[in-house]
Image (cartoon, rainbow, N blue to C red; front, side):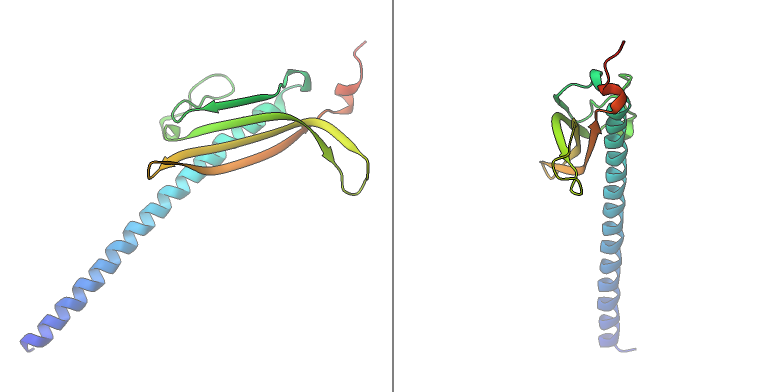
Length: 145
């Protein structure tokens, strides 16, 4: 091999190694983001299921922000360390649901909106946002004897 061929081979090898290293780095970043979104989905579903399990009379309109690292379960226990980089915003509002196929039919209930966030590059980043409607059921509407 001539000196020129060796130099060309070294340049090609260096470029190939740089491309592979950046691909690995991008894959690791994507894996970290996927884990954060999975944890955020679990935290949001946890809060939604907590509200859906309550009786209608115990639900109240609320606007609660749990700062990053302060999320707790419905029992008041803190989440594991994996959730320490996440925060959660819960909004519960009185709402009426309209049913498209039945004009004029309104279902009274609560709209539960949960957003889980973290910080990335110094700014707050929304990872997951879930909404559920908790209607007042017929049993809950009937007066108790």
